[in-house]
Amino acid sequence: MRHLGLNDITDLVLRNPSAADEENSAGKNSDSHPGGGDENADRGNWSNKREYLLSMIGYAVGLGNVWRFPYLTYQHGGGAFLIPYVIMLAVAGLPLFFLESSFGQFCSQGPINVWKAVPVLQGVGITMMLVSTFVSVYYNVIIAYSIYYLFASFQFPLPWTEYTSTDCNTTARAVNRSVMAGVNQICSEEFLNSPLKSPSELYWDQEALQRSSSIGETGPVVWHLALSLFLGWILIAAALFRGIKSSGKVVYFTATFPYAVLIILLIRGVTLEGARDGIDYYIGSQSNLTKLAEAEVWKDAATQIFFSLSISWGGLTALASYNKFHNNCYKDSIIVCITNCSTSIFAGFAIFSILGHMAHVYGRPVSEVAQAGFGLAFIAYPDAVSKLPISPFWSILFFFMLITLGLDSQFAGIEVITTCLQDAYPIILKTRRGQITVVICILLFLLGLPCVTGAGIYWVNLIDTFCAGWILLVAGLLEVFGLSWIYGGNQFIKDIEMMIGTKSAPFWLWWRACWFFITPVVLLVILGWSLYTFTAPTYGSVEYPQWAVALGWCMTAFCLLWIPVVAVLKLAQASGSLWQRLRSVCTPAEDWGPYLESHRGDRYGQSGTNKIDVYVISNKTDNRL
Image 1 (cartoon, helix red, strand yellow):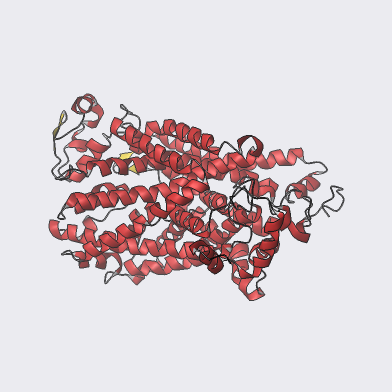
Image 2: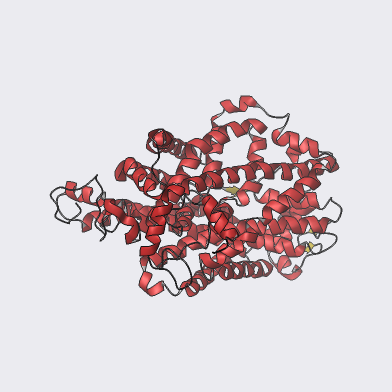
């Protein structure tokens, strides 16, 4: 008699009981790796359910949970902001997360090949892959900033504690004075000698970034950042060398360590003098329900939900595609979404308790020290921890946490690219996963070098503005519209029931309402409002020149261009009249459906024959019926 181990007990708890018998039967008919136990021998599967959940949580929980959500909450009425935040989670975040992860798991394909369901929209998958590529370039630069600050934290006192600037050619404690003195563009009076800048801000601008005065003045490569960037890519290549088999082991640490740090920081923070003031500003007595009448609050809540869950990047589809067919993707979606949002709220307490202490030390209101984004991670919080006893210890913890948060999200971004390539060329690339990963990391490292020059931070901000905004909203809108209205929402529900078992009509009532109407409307409103309120990007007080803004729009256009281009190509390749061609490209491909023959069942036939009961062209003789 076989003894049950921890993995077996976990599988029994998390498995979908209604599909267990079918899964066992399917397992008998499907091949597996010798000794590997994978249901899908061609693509592989997650070693166990824990690795998938930790990878999804690590992907969804990123830097934005720590450096953006707490600031938005404080800015938009404190605790009152949680009302629109939870509502937007229910009507937009969770429905899209469930839809996207189910989509990838059903057909075991990446974000491009899943669109065999609606061939005319296959360009959406290409857009997602390109967005992940652009974002991976600059996201690892942010990890490089954290790596640099981590190494800088092994000093006492912390180097930004007493950092000063005296004149254009002299920077106290500068590592590369000769380079700094030779870069005249950073020697403007406003830039260097402003009395309003704190030591931590001067350190960030002059020492860490060696920032030039504009994006047009590149300056030399900042070598300590270039080396940090190189180290970041080495870590990612090593973790992903064997795909999900290796990254699944790494996430046991990278996905859990940030929670340990946040708990430690919260315990330390609440014991500090002034912590109550910081928490009050975050989510306490300063809550303002009148803010709910402002449209900007609802727009920011919806945007934060959309981006914090990493929807429409392609990563959810790619990671879910390695699940076993009968995995309960519905339960997974609930777990990951709730964990993500709870982490955001919890992180706010840890961050604002220490910012409250910082405000107390300086004798200033919390509103004057609270910042978001780079300002929180690399200026305000480093300044705050420098005021604590044993400050290097707290600084090391904080930046190590930022690195692990960033790595998890970056893993999925690279996974999107490799999955798309392997799905496109399965025979050639099946056994070359490690080589593909290394080549991708090298190319993205080279593309990221302009982001570690004197003008690097401007490039990071530009790419973030134009490649991680409207493109994702457009892709998400087309995704939910394509599956609900072209492929057929009811058809998609039947596909999901093939995986998780039949559900009652009331169970699907909410999901139908969201997929058919509520979620598309919310995305349209966010997209329209974002475009209407668009202003040219700035970094602090530095405005971007027109050519840089135009370049940003070109990046947006390049990513979105593939949607109409692929649609036109599909129409051109189809045969018949225009109406017949249109119906043909809106009809699932013949090989659409579950990846393994044993899972296709009667609905999809046993030889790639698709028995879908909608959008079939009656006068075609392609054996679809």
